[in-house]
Image (cartoon, rainbow, N blue to C red; front, side, top):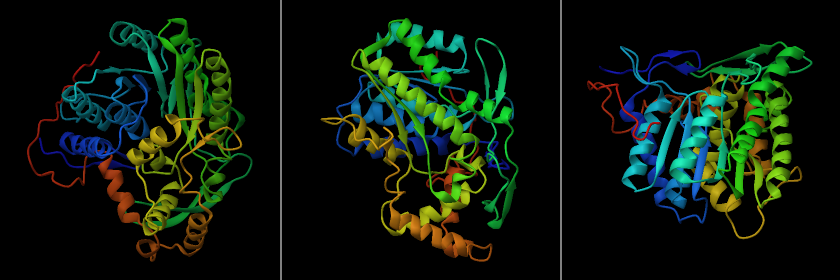
Length: 396
């Protein structure tokens, strides 16, 4: 079939296997050209098929030579429907790892469930023995609690007051005002249940109880803080409440693992084009302006550059990991430089539909959005007939 992008709001309902494979290969080649990292040996990435999770797995494998297991919830091609981008990404990763002679396995299913945790533990025990790094990078709008079976749904809303600010339709460049009503207490509770730290804690507890977590293990989960422009809808909103819960979980896990030489961290990462960030009002417009400013200063980074820096300059270095006053790793340090944020804030005040291309890098935002799904990738013939069915090597 000939696969073209079909969008619905902030998602693309099709994905291109060759385009996704090319994007994964670009990340692999970036890491292979960098110095090796004296890092983990056996890695579990929960949420491994896109964005920071995928980049973490690539860095672990191709910078540190680590074996890995990726857990993710993605769908294979069926009938006239393509597979999801994460499926194609993972197939390309598994093939590259196999060619490099590194063990890698995939488990597809609901990471929140007890069944997937049990299957993962069995695989670790059989193939790896134990893991010394758990990357928790789950991004999901819903969660079914494995004990109570309650279904939680997350929302992206402010807390307390109605929020009004600029936003953009990144498909056509129209700048408008977004008005978002505040969340209810139950919406806050449900968002924390989905995006907070409870499931991360459950993974660590299950791995420890099964004896497959190495004594000196490290675990890291990802967060974002961002500038004042986005705080009301992000850091001070429902997502921020969930991220606060994630941070409290990290502190508990650090104490829990520390008794055997282990560590737990929150890494605050840079704003990037991801399937998750595209769903947050105001954020795509902010990212478009941020990209323009950071590129002009020569300090722009994507997922793979961020994760390589996390591993090589923070997690696996001689001496203690540099942390901020709240105990967090900050690889959003370039984004949050005062001079960068001052320029972004100045451009933000001037943004209109008529000036969007002049004052932002919306063109790159739009291109990167489509590249998440394998489109607009150099060297791919998108008019060619292609088989959407792709098998994932080492799928368990």
